[in-house]
Amino acid sequence: MRICMDWSATTFDWNRARAFLVTAEEGSLSAAARALGLAQPTVGRQVEAFQDELGVVLFERAGHSLTLTPAGHALLDHARAMGEAAIGLSRVAYGQNDEIDGRVTIAASDAYAGILLPPILERLQAQEPRISVSIVVSNDAADLLRREADIAIRNFQPKEPDLIAKRLRTAHARFYASPDYVDALGEVTKPGELGSARFIGLDDTGLMLGMLQQLGFPITDDNIPLRTGNFLVMWALVKRGLGIGVLDDRIGDNDPDVVRVLPDMPPLEFPLFLVAHRDIHQSRRLRFVWDFLSVALR
Image 1 (spheres, one colour):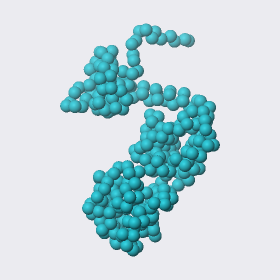
Image 2 (tube, one colour):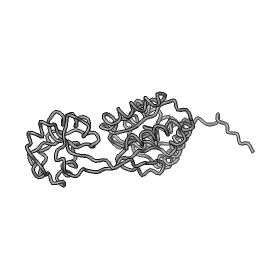
Image 3 (cartoon, helix red, strand yellow):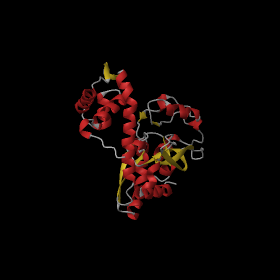
Image 4 (cartoon, helix red, strand yellow):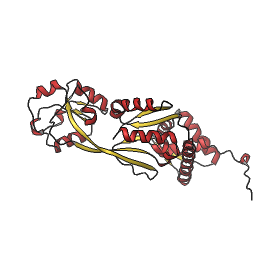
């Protein structure tokens, strides 16, 4: 039996439904506009048009935020299902291409993207010049499900069932400083002798200070006069002799401008994973880059 749908009987617009979905998830039009890469008035018009199309009120304003009405709550799960279906359609269509030519997007932290990946990508381009690469630089988890990236380098195993992860190695982080700064510290053999040392902080939350104190460093907040959320900035400050920093020893040991602090101290250990959507095996290009990175990052 053939079923025919009269598409002229409906004016449904997925862009409007998507604007409703993202606004509901983000909680405001401004946040939804940032997530969608659109102007806030455009998102507002799409939401208004969606409400007019359905003949219901979907949001109520609460200060600067928007809250769902009962009608909005009733539609939210359906909109999410539509969004997942649209992403799935795009993902499957994207993966059916068996050509090696094309672009692959890799997500990595700033330190890995700026220091570890360039020589690896140089070899990748030499071996397969038909593949172009985009790099998403972020210390946060890239949303592989929404295709912010095809492949991500992460220090944790994802919990999403649609993602696959390959543990590459146990990475080691160590303490580094410039040779001049180490000379100024004098001979030190254990954390307890660094009570007057300066460290370069990587957050404003106190997590790094707590970690250092647990390791036996007798320091306070005053020992961390410089802070940054960017590993590359931290590394530049370390190399200028402004304090001690901590980084993957695969990077630190290969940088001639720094030396280990407390070289005999056991390293900090953390896992290194390669992560992608499980549909990666449907694409020859993505499989190639996945396999190449799996070997190069070990």
